[in-house]
Image (cartoon, rainbow, N blue to C red; front, side, top):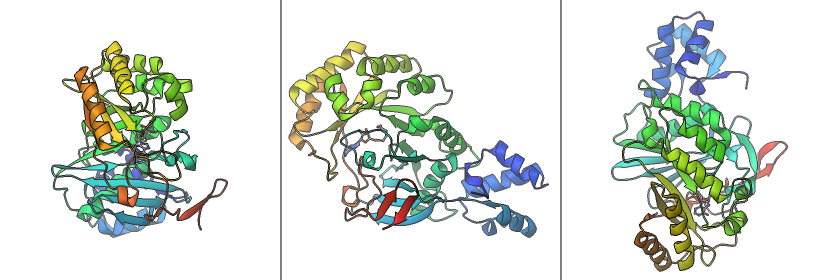
Amino acid sequence: MKQTHLIGLTTAELSDFVASLGQPAYRARQIFAGIHGRRLRSFDEMTDLPKELRQQLANQATISSLRLESRYISSDGTRRYLFKTYDDYPVETVFIPEERRDTICFSSQSGCPLQCTFCLTAQLGLLRNLTAGEIVEQIIFALNDAYSVGVATPRGTNLVGMGAGEPFLNFDHLMKAIGIMNDAAGLHIVPNRITISTAGIVPSIRELAATPNRPHLAISLAAPNDKLRNDLMPINKKWPIQELLAACKEFEKSLRGNERFTFEYVMLRGVNDSDSHARELANLLNQHDLRAKVNLIPHNPAEPLPYQPSAPERVEAFREILESKGIHAFIRRPRGRDILAACGQLAARSASGEPPLSIDRSRGLRAG
Ligand code: SAH
């Protein structure tokens, strides 16, 4: 992209950019507040800037770069956005309204290189890492769609890095985006309202533990032993469960107050949901004595993948076994399943399940 994409710049970088235009530093603060605080989409809307500067900016820079391809609204109010990057790769974002807060689930990569067998995004393979700007833009777009440009949000915004991609394989861009969103002159979404979910990239778990003002951590476990986890999440062959939990133990030292971290356990009927799996999981977590809770996520339909969700009674029985062994466990209610917005369903599909786009890896995405 020839033009500078301003949404992905920190205030310091924006100051440099503004200086290169021969403008005083306070203009950078105005522009930052316009983009991130008021969520403006064009320089024309920044009426506190002189007209000539707005023109100059429009010539040399863009605020945003994602193009909305489709928007789907679920019967439960969840919204899914399918964007394309400037070079035509798919990006998906999910907005989940709740009574007391909104949650935005953002993507960190276009596609995903991990091969989790139960997740549809895996079918895309890795297309590319998203830039910090492309991450921040997903949040700004979703808030503008829900509340209109320039309108303050009526309740808090939580973010979850649980969309497409493995966030820890795009660590630097992710952390930069989190820093930009933390700025009080902008979105002011503090890391304490952000949870990053990983399939278990061990070195990054250690790195996150050492990061000041870090977001919360969730780990996708999906199995209580290496044999099963190797099958479901091949990344386990690189970092098996004992190594993963050792890194978690290390991470535990960085927990604040009554903060806990979360294990996500996708419930696959007849695969990982028996009583003995529950006991094995409880024993595993108790062995490591981790300050953690478990979120049980019934599998979301993801044809053509060969899995079914566990029955509600099975999920409840599994939860009770965990609780009886002292592990706090919660059942996650799926949101936006009807529009393929739920966990593991993000694969650039239309709401009817048809892939709207055909992917040619060498050339990016083409309408098809
Ligand atoms: N790569 C990261 C973040 C994306 S996956 C990670 O693995 O954590 C986000 C969550 O969705 C993970 O916990 C994953 O186990 C879960 N998930 C994936 N496919 C799913 C499906 N079809 N149904 C329910 N949960 C699924």
